Amino acid sequence: NKTKITLEKDFVIANVDDRLFSSFIEHLGRAVYYGIYEPEHQEADEQGFRKDVISLVRELGVKMVRYPGGNFLSGYNWTDGIGPRENRPVRLDLAWRSIEPNQVGIDEFYDWAKKTNVEVMAAVNMGTGTPKAAGEMLEYCNFPGGTYWSDLRKKNGHSEPYGIKTWCIGNEMDGPWQICHLDAVDYGKKARETAKIMKWIDDKIELVVCGSATNLLSTFPEWDRVVLEHTYEHIDYLSLHRYYENLGNDINFLASFVDMNNFIKSVYSTVEYVKSLKRSTKSVYLSFDEWNVWYQQQQTRYDWVTAPPILEDQYSLLDALVFAGMGMTLVNNADKVKIACLAQLVNVIAPIFTKNGGPAIRQTIFYPFRDISMYGRGRVLQPVVVTPSIETCYGDAPVVYVSAVENIEGNISLFCLNIGKSPVHTIELNLRSFGKMEMIFWSVLKGKDLNVRNTFENPDQIKPILKQNIDGAFDTFKLDIEPLSWNVIRFK
Ligand code: AHR
Image 1 (cartoon, protein in one colour):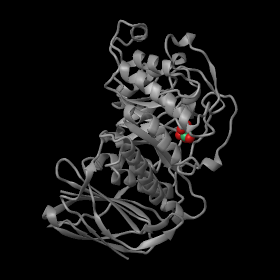
Image 2: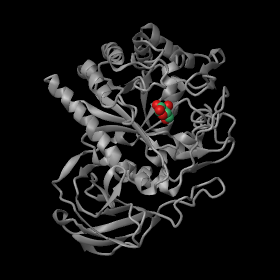
Image 3: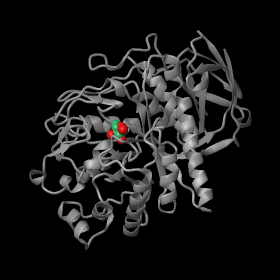
Image 4: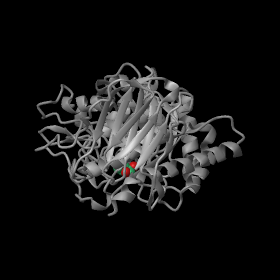
């Protein structure tokens, strides 16, 4: 029941790209309508956006938000969401069997993003959509003016171009569930031609091509290789998505980070393979643009209603611990993963949960995301960790999982997830090359009952609590951490 952690100033994995702390809003369930947008709500601003939700998104520390989907994207005609609201068509959304009123589109979303202080990561439809339509959407958003689409943006109220930098070419096109799903060769060709058009229109953008929607698909990792072979020189990132759920064994569930880590490493190896094959000097990185805990097997179905309460997982403390491990895995792979989107942001498998006409609360997963986003920016260190291991369905998992980041001010953030159950586990931390340091704070997310959730009646049942600081300056620390806990410890 002992873990030794040594941090060295010069053992650095990479600088974190701030876009690692991004999220996702899809036209799905109550994410847009009754999530970010509810004009009748007492918290609504003049455009109908909920100010209470905006302030929670800011508190979460989200850098960028992917929009408008998701599976929804593959049947979406982006022009349905522009122009006078009263003229916009009401459509069937075949992805989620819902009715889409199109009262929010790219123009409103851009305004919401500005108010919320987040960047937009836009996505173009590669299901029913064409390369031409993708180029037109980009022209509408980013071209300064004097052309049909850019002038239409101006006519619709935005004289200045949006300058959206990061664009996804489709969503999960390897998934048989996707509207107009393609095989890897067909998608690879379509994505390459779309990328050419898009970069001709705006050579400052960065493009994300669809990689594997999950490592559970039989096409993984062949899909990634084939798509990259078609697109490598034209794109900047390969996407990957992964959700985990508790299938009945808490330890396997807690070890989800082991699988996620292996997934990242395999996909990145595929990227490096194609780089060598192409004799390329260009680097392509990863965009983990959907990740979370999602109880996919427990979904309720509603047919043909607007904003149905679907995918509204209520997260427990256990889910938050698993989620923390996933977030740490992204940080620990900061040399490979440059963008990551917590899927999603409001109501739909989300850290923020609203009641129609009522309050907005923080779900349990809100806290690990906020902690990592707030304290995980800077240089990720490569810790040397000696810890016992536990056998899981993903192989051996470390009992104490560690990430460490040196922030720009020279402070160190140490994240420790303890998936062990022993009453006390001692960490011996050696900060030798940093000299003597003082503890700024130590916060912990834990609880007696792993099933507790935050509810509208009891919104603060699960939140981090501060532990007693160790006073004084030292280069080694002895820390007793509690079973099944997520710890954030900061030093200066
Ligand atoms: O985030 C929910 C769904 O999960 C998205 O629409 C899709 O891309 C993924 O399968």
